[in-house]
Image (cartoon, rainbow, N blue to C red; front, side, top):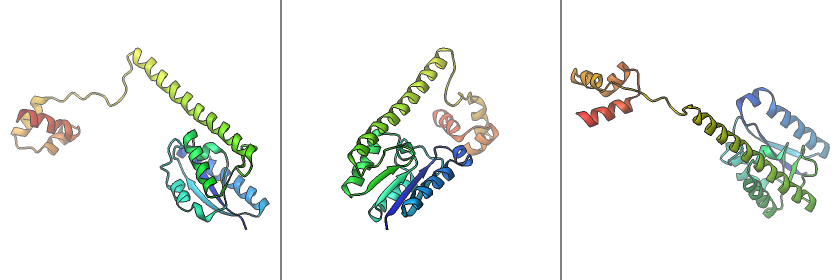
Length: 194
């Protein structure tokens, strides 16, 4: 019997709540049932696909020798980077394992056409991610030009008040609690002035 590993992933908790993982699992189970494949599911919930440091993904890789085939619903569920995708496909090839993406017609690495198609689709997935990153960068630049500031708001801490409380015997932690701020700027003020 063919042993298939199914990799399931959603990028956000909202996608999980909306049933993304469940739909992927159901589609892959139906695919495997029609082919009489024995299936093991590896599922990451609410994790970006832009890197491979995902718990279920790594667990699947660690057990890759025990399967015949890896199945995903769509290739962007596996990887968003062309390099990561090609590295994964090369790993499977080196171990004589197949790869199928059931929603991406023709993606079946057991034949040359499928290998070519997966490289093309992987390039488009990476291109899409780069376009999103470029739009985000340009949006931030546009907002900065109009005075929008990003990051933590700048804290104005009254140095004299900190020193006064310190002279009354309060610890840095007590001062930070009294001034409703983190301890780091209090320690900096005390270090520079005591």
